[in-house]
Length: 358
Image (tube, rainbow, N blue to C red; front, side, top):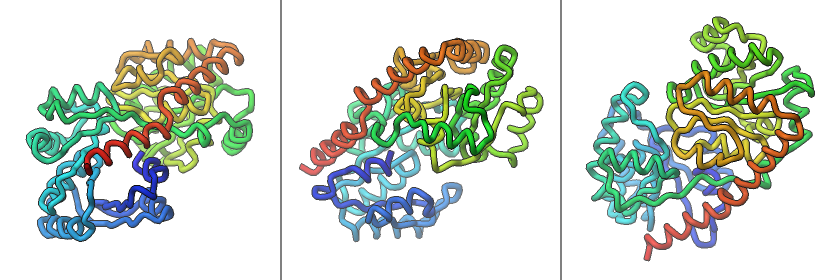
């Protein structure tokens, strides 16, 4: 979303700079291709470096921004404090998480969240959250209730759309028949994403539909992940599951699917749902964050950690005829266009920044 907003914001009104607290990655390179300078601080989140923190303050003071928009917990805390110490009063935090359970969240992250909650009445003017559920969870955790503003994720339906070309391209790449039913799951390997529950659900679906193929994408979702591969072998679905690892062609992947599944136990507003829906792909998702609101009546909603219900919801959509699934996908795409267009989301961010500057 940071990249999408930066690529669409009115550059005649806004001059952008981005600071990465750690190093540079693929998103940094994409931002630089847009002509946006990206600074890297080389920080580590496991060990605080006071010298690098002072350098961050100096960098912000040198840039002299009218508004600082921080991103994610560590960025909110470290970037927010550094901005205020650099003399910037217009600070806006951005929260994009919905699960703070002790068994799913690192103790260090929970410590950062607790510190941020204490400072939320002092440091930021606004706290942007991409889901209503996430806002409520953080307010209950101690964040300032008066500072929140909900801005959902946005999607470009002109770039994300059904494509016969991509449908055939991905299937040819993976050796999957054009007539096969293909289910996708796009998420990094993380406890919040619940890959174990996903594999267990796939095993149950396999008893009814043994020929369905599953494309799993994301960081550490590949052949080198011993734990994930053990789950797959134990569930006897190794002939059905394709581990693709991280991909930079998600629109193509989405357009190749008949159905997308999200098995997460913690989300705020999953981008993957909007991306799949914009490509005309129906979704089955757990009811976490604003997932149920995003999908609406265009897909299936199940409770998190309910493997049986997840499997039965997948079977229900797979039972539909090709035409019925296409109609469901068309309704999903229309919902994204009507409620979550990238243009409207970027405009909302622009209005917020201008309001802060006044």
